[in-house]
Amino acid sequence: MTGLGDLMKQAQKMKAEMDRIQAEVAARTVEGSAGGGMVTAVANGKGELLSVRIDPEVVRGEDLEMLQDLVTAAANDALRKARELLTQEVSRLAGGLGLPGLL
Image (cartoon, rainbow, N blue to C red):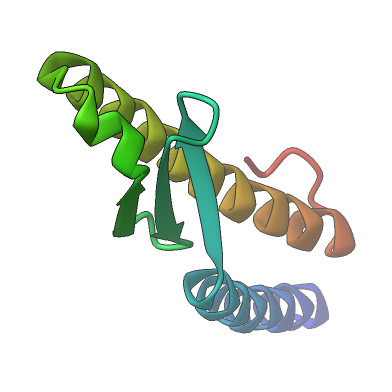
C-alpha cells in the first residue's frame, strides 16, 4: 500500500500546486494590441477581458468597421496571451512533478 499512499500524496501535492498556480495566474494581467498599438486590450489570467483602450486618432477617422476589427483583434490577442500564460505555468508544474506533457 506504500505505492498507493505515495501516489495519493503526489496527487494532493499536485492539486495544491495547481490551485496555487491558478490563483497566481488569475491575479496576473496580459495586454494584447492591434493596429500598431492603436487599440489595446487587457485580460487577466482567468481569460476575462478587463479593459480596452482606443487611441483617439482611431475614432477621429470615423471608420467604425475598422475600429470594430481592431477591438476584436486586440481582445483576441490578449485572451490568447492569457491562455498561453496558464499553459506555461501548468507545463512548468507538470515538469516539476515528473509529468511532462500534461497539457
